[in-house]
Image (cartoon, rainbow, N blue to C red; front, top):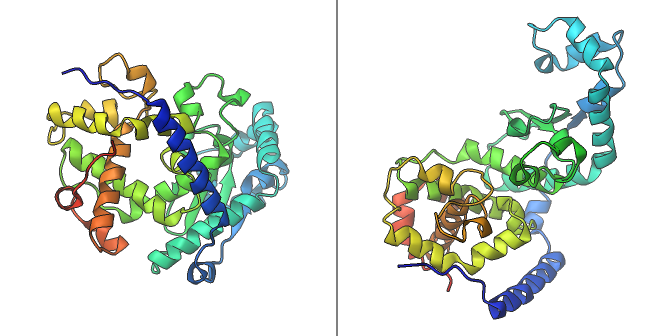
Amino acid sequence: MKHQFVVNPLSILCMFTMMFLFVSCREGSEVPEEIVSMKVNLEVKRFDREFASASPETLDNLKKEYPYLFPQQYADSIWDLKLQDTLQQSLLEEIDLAFGDFKDEKDGLELLFKHIRYYFPNQPTPKIVTVSSDVDYNNRVILADTLLLLGLDNYLGADHRFYAGIDRYISEGLDKKFLESDVAAAFAKKVIPPPTGITFLSQMIYYGKELYLKDQLLPSIPDEDKIGYTPAQFEWAQANEEQIWRYFVERELLYSTDRKLGPRFLEPAPFSKFRLMLDNESPGRIGRYMGWQIVKAFARNNDVPLKELLKTPGKTIFEQANYKPKK
């Protein structure tokens, strides 16, 4: 059977209307007082700025304050050269232009960690250190128990000249609007157990839990930013949800252990690989989107606390979700 993945113009009109109403409501809504009043001491250290103004004579002071950023196997001459490197200087200048005093970002991260403190009171609030990572976008956020490293040079905007040689589907995520979402994703790895099985469904639900956790921790962020889609990509996923689900079911992919399904539907990619003519229209990671919808259906139909939901096996979530894709 051929699947018709289509976008109905009337559906899109309704979708835009709903999105407008949703945005209006979101802008007019307030975070509950019990979360706003949470005490969070968020310390931000701007190593990127400190390094930009450093000299060989003051480098020892930085090494004492940030020993974890100066591996002992590297000689001082390496750091002296880096101080003089024109590309490094340009990166630091561009970070300063994009982020300034980092106040807006600090406010957003503070609210994120207030939500974390509310749902996970025993989780420590880490010290934030902002750095330049030589555009190491695979490690743009590193979260340890008490330390959060943010590579700000990975958030300069999709069209920035420093990203000219990077695939478009990657550079689209290199924007500061995704910063809080990326931090929430790093936190999710600390509180969501890995999938208990290796089926496609169990992996979908694992990523669905991460996105559902973002719903709770970042309620004011647009859904497309949580999953790293453009608005058009998110609209495509919504409009074609039923057809995508039918494709997965009819091809018996849900309980498949085929490792190729990860690159096709779960991992970052320019598009998902249905092996149909429509592939170029689809966004990558569509399996994560579908897992998100299953977890949200489970949450709607079962009164389960957040921490318990995150620990619930994927098989149980699927069986009790009573998931029905949107038509």
